[in-house]
Amino acid sequence: MGSLIFLNNMAVAPSLTIGGNIIKEESSDVEVTKPSIVSARSVKTQYLNLRKLVQVQLSKIFADIFVSEWLIQNEESTPSVRELTKKYLNMDLLTTKAFINNIEKSSEDMDKIEESCIKAWSVYNIAKEQEKIMFDKYQFTQNVVNVENQVLKILAYTEYQGIMVDKELASQLLIDVKSSQEILQKKAYRMCGYHFNFNSSNDVAKVLGIYRGRKVSTKKSVLTSHNSPMASIVIYWRKLNSILTKTLYPLTEKAYMYSTGNRINPSYTMFTCTGRISMHEPNLQNVPRTFSVPLKYLSIDDTEPCDDLMEFNCRNIFKASPGTVFVSADYCQLEMRILTHYSKDVVLSRIMASDVDVFKSIAASWGGIPETEVDDDLRQKAKQLCYGILYGMGNRTLSKHLDVSEIEAAVFMDSFYKTYPAVRVFTQNLIEECRSKGYVETLMKRRRYLPDINSHVYSKRTTAERQAVNTTIQGSAADIAKAAMCAIDDKTYGDAQPYLILQMHDELIYEVQENKKSAFIKILKEVMETTIRLSVPLPVKVKSGYTWGSLKEVNI
Image (tube, rainbow, N blue to C red; front, side, top):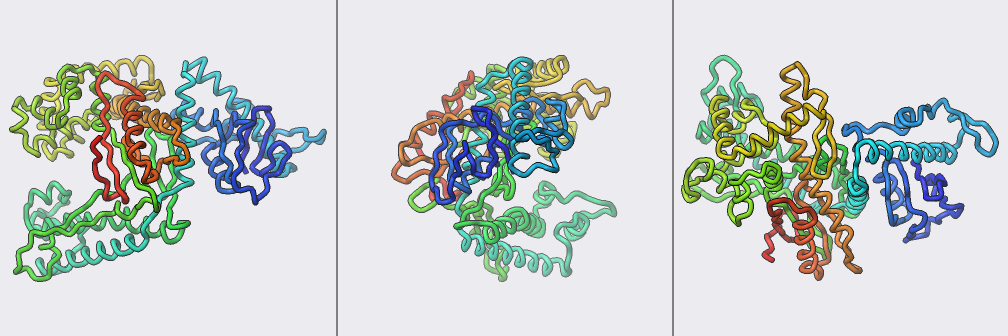
């Protein structure tokens, strides 16, 4: 049972009694414009329930006490209404008695409607106390709070709509991946002469002849450097196994057991430490891109050379509804551009203002060579270094990503900072400011408190330092994406309203009427590039297609 508070302070439970009038089940399209919701607990859940039950479209949502508490505390765990009532109102809902129609009742004596009214009263008063902290103590702007609440409503509708799944294609892809994995397995067994566990580092090391009596790593970089057919087979087998266990099995189960009308409805959460939106049940943000296996490893006959590839495209499972098309808009190097904006590094600013391959240009200036001499390996190292800084990686973690020693990783990091000195100054100043204040802020002034930033324990302190940099950059990227979502939602589209189908962090994917695609693309690109302006451009790459896996770039 949920609780809502309306403008006239009247508590309304989702018993479908609003202002004394019962909304009948046969009402197919109820527009509730007045009163608007002032306060609620778990707006997304309430909104979803109203949409599913009576197709209610709420015009305004001003406050969700869970969103407000997350903005205040920035913790991933969500407290209960009872916990918040204790915190802000100094009362326990389980033990406090109330007079209802002049009759004193405890929580055990109340019916569901009465209980919900009490909770609604609590929600309303909790919201008022939270506002004092947000606006008086933390000096939040109303816009920050409004954006987070509007995003919650957008995500509720995204969950309600779901995304269409091609069940037959999903089943066939699962069969193809399993059969390919079995072929790789049989081929490997035949090559070495016995069965072994592909997921066991010791077993794989023995097969490859690199086992020396103690545990040895058989991660992808080690297998790649081994440069043998057996090592390649293990790499491809593990990738297919990952696709099966992390993507195809969960998706097909969801599609066949829990979907309605060939659509699945993932759930989103905003309550993360950085503010990035995450997804679960299922998590489509982790669905891999197209993956290929050389047919020579899937051929029974080893005598015939073959350079062809067999492709596995899990994203093709997801398709647009009839008469519609997917439109995707993806920010280009968003986090690097935010780092450049904050650091004001001259070289990076020049690169970001140019129409070039950003990471290739960064690699060239870092390596002190012309761009024409930058190969794929150097470009990838430069890219990994950039993200190592963005995520606050230490030398040990970076060495693993670059597959080099810790000393080499330290040299790479130091040379990178020497090439872009303003970046080091920015990160050092950010950490020192966090030590002084105890928190960091994102672009939209959301806070994250880091109590371990002044810890005497080295591991705790360095972790907090990494979190300070990561939260500032990644949290600001989340701010920009959310602001764009709201600006797009605020636009008027007539009778062909596009809706967000997938939120992929820096990428937004919409489903839009096919005959409205061109007009929407122009609006989408302009809004995303201009809603928030930095000292460097925020270019957006737009793609379109009938399936998620077949999106093609659209030149505007």
